[in-house]
Length: 283
Image 1 (cartoon, rainbow, N blue to C red):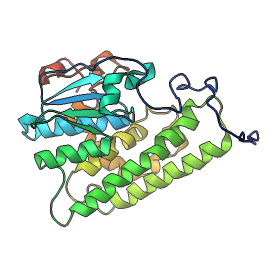
Image 2 (image 1 turned 90 degrees about the vertical axis):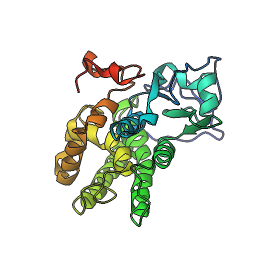
Image 3 (image 1 turned 90 degrees about the horizontal axis):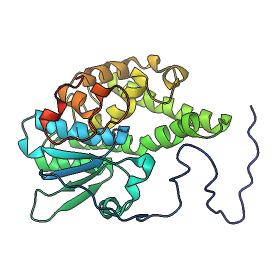
């Protein structure tokens, strides 16, 4: 189907009525839109997030650290409803001027430290606890795959996901363009995982923690409607093996439901303040 021709205006201006799922909150300006402080819990780490693929990176990392015996990684997780514009409230913007989840407040040192961007949160926690990020010759490989994922996510989410699932109209060019790129990224991962157990090598690292939440929903279904079938995800057998192995990790099972506010009731955990919060959940 040919797309209608779009002629850019001489000077672009914001069109609040352009439609789409996020039209009511998408604006070309940054900063706080209303005054509201963030809640604070008792732990050193305060996470403000939602169980999107980017948000799940942080909760899996924290749960993996706790599972590995790092009691200092205990955290409070607070839900930020991005559909309601909670990321534009003053308390959140103070921690993350880019108004995106996840955002972390680290109070473990003499001065509170804000950490925003999911890749930065993973590195910050890995270096603080000396876990899931090697210090030997394999470190560069792990970091390369970590930043491969960070750089790839916008093509999958804001690219394919938006035009295929959320745009007010389905146009052939953007869907095909980003479907091709999404499949190329799966092919990159599949070829790598044919060579090694995990993305960074033989050990599970931040590279896997970063990539899993984006790739797993395509393997299992449940993201962007019929995307799994449309993209022929079954073709990527090594990716599927990797996803299924990681999905069985206890910390991953817990991390995937933190700040989740949709789906089955026993698979949601709006806030997380201690391990007891997982009691009665489907893990």
